[in-house]
Length: 332
Image (cartoon, rainbow, N blue to C red; front, side):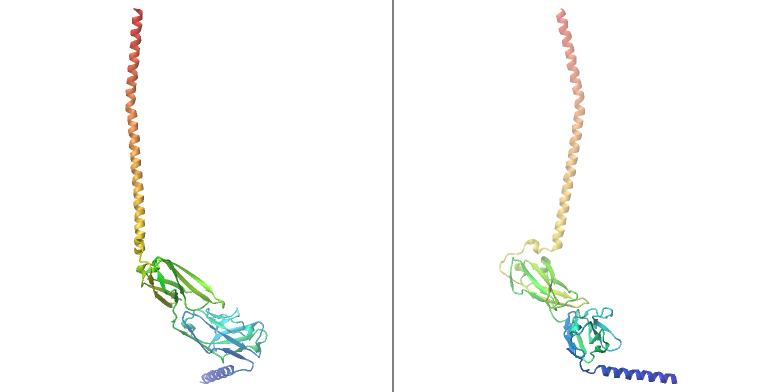
């Protein structure tokens, strides 16, 4: 019983000391100040940059400063972003984009996730003077990860002319520097167009993602729906659409345009097979015809040789008879 009572007393004292320490750290300390928003909203899948400036011990320029963002509560110590390479962080999409040597504690969150929702605070450490280390727990930042609501932008959205090539562009929501989203097109017109994705680098280091679709519209495409889908992974998607307004020439699209691509492919393959069969059949026919002709030529040669022998034999006999007759007459 005495042992249990001693243990309970030790736990109580630990709790009291922890509360006193937290109360002390959360107080404003002369010379230490920070300017940062207390609440920030970021849509799931998108990104946000949280501007942050601080002073420590009445200084705003340091050397070899260590800066870190940590997740509340105080214990256990959990780093989410830091410029100290040896420290392990649990948030790969959190980045300390500011330079603590100049009092800049700016934090950037890319590809926000539901589990990123929480409260965070900044800690500054002087690499040579530990007395200048300070955790700004008096200025917590509440990060709220909300549902994705922004839509991609599609342009142009005006009237287009039938028979003339046109390119529409889809721009993903958000200006981020994290993982690029997947942008795809949906609609009947997409089957006949060519797509291309590209990245636009902004002056602030962020990136804007685009996807273009190039196609030739026809009059029957009027009022067709064209949709741009943007996926940020983890089943986080958003979409935007436009209705095509095709005007001008009243010519119909080519026959092949109205056919399904699989049907066209089947027709091409079938024609190739038929052509191969025709070539093989012609080759076999010509080969057989040549063989018959050669065989007939050989048989004709064999049948004509005995006739030539008989003719030559008769001619020789007649010559011999003529010579004998001529000889007999001369003697007489």
